Image 1 (spheres, helix red, strand yellow):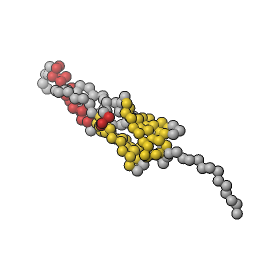
Image 2: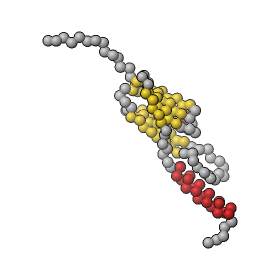
Image 3: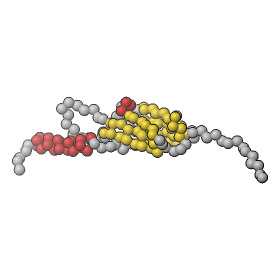
Image 4: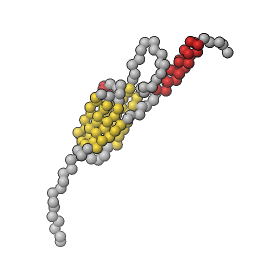
Amino acid sequence: MKNYPFQQINEKFNKFFSEIQKEFYDDKVLDLNTNIVSLPDRYIVEIELPGVKKEDIKITLEDDHLTVQGKKQRKSYEDEKLVQVERQQGDFKRTFKLNNDIDPQNIKAKFEEGVLYITLQKLQVEKQKETTIVVE
């Protein structure tokens, strides 16, 4: 075993772990922290997406499935060496099965301060007027 100066050992250690961390985080599908709030006339889906650009978010509705997907990328620097990696990056995708009480023509999305808000209007069910049933 060679006698390495401390600096060379430290550089090898940092290189080894930064490559492992980079590999681990680059190909990961991210979990999305989500709240769903029910109000009398609508649902609000709140999804945390810190560090994501609005243009990197895609929302689709197919049949009764609402899908939110995109990519979270970190800023990179020339000649960088990752020393510590804690912020997640990579692709994200989350699909929600919608209830029958959602108006698919009246879904809105807003992105502010790193949170995506999707408003799902509930269908307005008309209360039926009183009907008299004739007994035969």
